[in-house]
Length: 389
Image 1: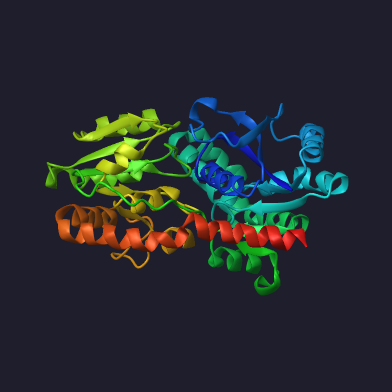
Image 2: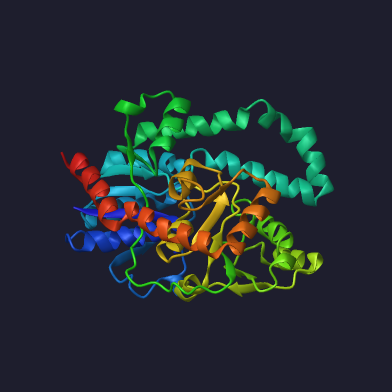
């Protein structure tokens, strides 16, 4: 029995990294992994990803894809189908797949609960800030839906519908299961929720002699990552630490806005490095890795940084981030959302105290071993066994 995933952009971010990891784990068991893809980014597929069978979909999220999905499931003995993160996609495809095949359905939430509501609010904030007409539209036509909670209730209903259609509802930590179960009205203890943590490969040999460099590694977008907050925090510490620099590794639609912000603020030591499909040389250099996200389901970059011996700092924006970095100032640094002054003070504290920073990095390296590939494989194996009965 084989397994399939479906992805919008592949490869993309953390969810796609997890798919690659699962594919490597299952290969040794003779299980084939298939990935249905709307938008294939061939130039970003890592060299080792030779064990994934990619099936392109000719439409964006549309019921016209159903014949392709159903036929591929039947022809390739796909017994489990994983939806990574889009509850609406489950509603689009689940009924037909269930009716025409014996395939079990798994929904895997790779973000924090109800991220769909959070992202819409962030997009509105961005648009309102940048456009008078968007501001007018917000106050006249849209604000009441958020004030009255109409938008949130609609998304909660979509989660309940998704929950009813799938066989397993995967979450990244127990707190997420509790939050969703309370919102949709199910008993968390007897529910379909299963904790399936993201995994990281531990490294035996790391570069311990780090450079005096702070890094952001990830997508450059507004609604998710809010990198402009990091630039604001950096503006408060740059002059105090003339031997340190800030490096931005990644690409995205906010790239030009961020570069303009750096120029407008007169920042001298901020380097935009673009996209790299091999961030390892940067982790080797980075003393500190930062996130300033409004929300972050898990934060794969935090685990990658920790296993590479980097100190990490992020806003305490979700249970996932909290689980990786806690206790604060032991395995990482958690900052009150979204306090730029506190972030800057915490950052300068890390930059100023070499011993503290190195001790945090060492402690985090040990802590992050909890999320090993072996543990994640055991979690998925338990789900496979459960669904095979």
